[in-house]
Amino acid sequence: MQPAKRVPSGNRLLAALPRKDRLHFIAGCEEVDLVFSDVLFEPGDRIRHVHFPASGFVSLITPLDGVACLEVGLVGDDGMTGTPLALGVAVSPLKALVQGSGSALRMAAAPFRRELAQSAALRLLLDRYLFVRMTQLAQSAACNRFHLIEARLARWLLMTQDRAHSSSFRITHEFLALMLGVRRVGVTRAATSLQKLSLIRYSRGTIAILDRPGLKAASCSCYQTDRDTHRRVLR
Image 1 (tube, rainbow, N blue to C red):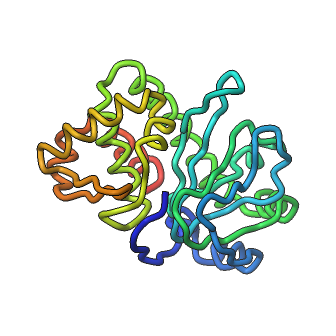
Image 2 (tube, one colour):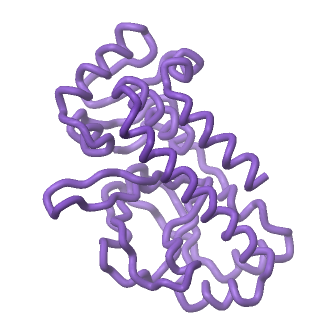
């Protein structure tokens, strides 16, 4: 998936650091391109870098039985990839797949660990971010179990728009089914339902959000819960 239009921005997680800590951290980073469909790491890989997207976004995907997979996280300018390193774990349990092209600040694992040891502000910020991620993961598990596909699809589209900074992006029903953990026919029905309500327009692999307030109303409460958690803990 690739947004039709990008609006470059800074990483909001790093922006929450005190100025001195932020400038010191950024000085140790390099700016890199996030290229659509690139894999930053696979399950079982040693994590060699952390990425803080400034634009573009990355899906975090967990494998299931070696034949299926499910998206469990979506990282844009609100976060980072490679969080196990912040917990002292060098191996990833997830696949990190670039779904929206853009740019990111990248730091190698060893200097990242040094920064964590030297900056109490960075340590505290990432502890809070990890708490938010764990809370959102628990919310997603409940959402996938109890909420209707239409509401889950609306939630996912809103989350993607937040990170794509665009009202339209390219995506296939096959990919949506993969991300939501349902059959393709279920996604087709859900997308058709949202389109009949004039909330989205789907044509030739492109989804355009036509009515964001309406899409929020169609979404389950998990979308706003996630936003409230992020705002409350990371403000």
